[in-house]
Figure 1 (cartoon, rainbow, N blue to C red):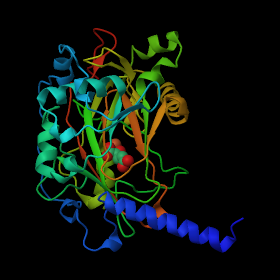
Figure 2 (figure 1 turned 135 degrees about the horizontal axis):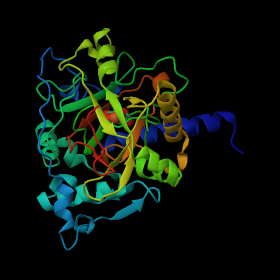
Figure 3 (figure 1 turned 90 degrees about the horizontal axis):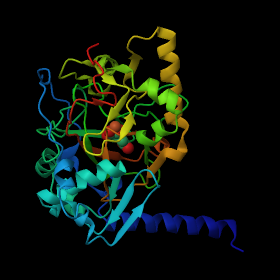
Figure 4 (figure 1 turned 90 degrees about the vertical axis):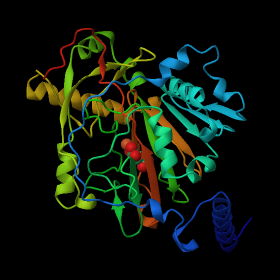
Length: 370
Ligand SMILES: O=C(O)CCC(=O)C(=O)O
Ligand SMILES: [Fe+2]
């Protein structure tokens, strides 16, 4: 039986081993010397951008549907593990950065089908840097430039999340009892994002996982009668509070594009798979159009609570160095988990956010004018 001192010393050495393994895999801690991703730290420019213009989106997943082997990009994978039956696949042995145009189309289709793909060992992808991140993202749609968040200097299309002992951008902790904040990215845009790419450049030794849920499964749990009602509804999504937060002096205090609100169907149809997904989220959906205030608040609260508590629709990504995660923002929601703030460790992530089509209602002919 180990003495308490031995147990503590074993624990210390396993922490040291973990640190060495992470360093060998490319992790760079504040104590290791100059930060290797210093050029990708958040920069809050005073630039101003005009309102976004509508554009035609052709989903790359459509092209893969016509291929004889739409999953050929997985042929050389050494492991393919489904994280849950409904959501998420983890892939090892595929170098995303080397995929040609057809391979990228196939990835788009697979992300549309599985909601979430987790690619391990993507040092090549991460090392190629921000010009490559943009080139990668443009394959999937017009790149969104975030109105308020920080980005690497000169690369406004790269949205950053950042936290360390002294600063936090995008992980502000309010007075809530939880740090989870479920959302679908920038759902207030007229054409919100589809396939989205995210990776961590620096992560805590433990904690800071990201949680995802399938909005397709979330919808399917409801009764046919209730789903039929939801299909008739549309809701307002707003970027105003996010902009006000920045205007109040927080998160870089920059608002580079005036905030917008848009009306989207409460149930949207995926343009490639035809699957229906619930499209409301606590962070940006404000009210259901046409309902009395109490009706709207009650239904939204019910749906948000359903998203929060249905662990049986969720998948959790535990980060390791050089992991690149892709999700389809049309059919999933996600939240960061900020359970590492006491350690003061650095967590630094980058997101590439191609916009997609204006959400397609489940019901043909649903009038989307407010
Ligand atoms: O930091 C994370 O795990 C997720 C951040 C996030 O929500 C995003 O970048 O869209
Ligand atoms: Fe997000």
